[in-house]
Image 1 (cartoon, rainbow, N blue to C red):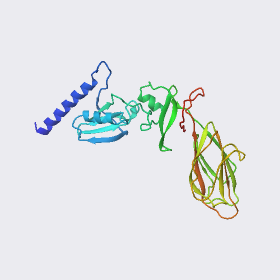
Image 2: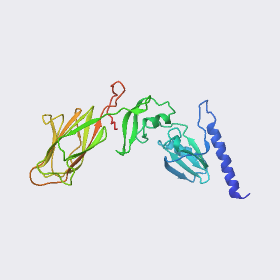
Image 3: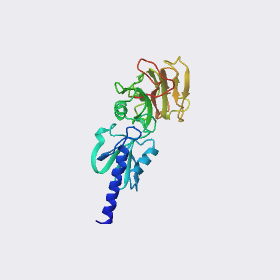
Image 4: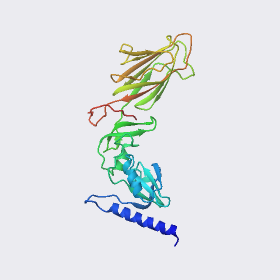
Length: 298
């Protein structure tokens, strides 16, 4: 038997001893056990090389709050830290003869409980906790926004409580992209807006509304956007905007915003684009609320 084979056998025996110790109860507490020949794929966020024994993986997993589990590749002395468990993603738990799988056994942060560990859905959170997750506030990952958002998960139904925005426009030449509690407004469908435009948008929600301009190019002074804190032009004027500078982010004080766009008879420009979304208190079943602000998106 050559030295390399002997070395591998020692490593293998050491791994068996290590994982057997992890599976034994410590102070009568239930501990996790390794699963030989299995791995969790698609959720690896960090790889660590030069890990001669699996305890290196466990130590590094303990140090990273995102780590929910790890694969140990004993043929390559490598750790693969994952931000999910096999319970959260059973469809990604597959056979692999070169790996061990181990779920973090101590101080594992619940999926969705921090912004660094957002869940894809309330159902994924409940699966991760093996059906024991309680209803409450959780961070969810909405890929369309590319940021985690705080929403209320009702675990008995495994759905998040939604808010909505209803949008109506007086102008056929404008464009609106809707998606429930968020969307996008454009002043024009063509490359440039028309002369003599007089358009309005009415936004109605069950909570406050945030408006963010991401594109703005109108004729200085003569073509302008007005934003009103309410349902019509008789509501308080938040701001009048024109030129090429992006207006500041606008948040309504109530559940309505009214926007107008007016152009004169001469110069035509690219116009504006703005996104809107609901900014609401975390909603509970029964229409009560928790203290503080959060954001809920569909």
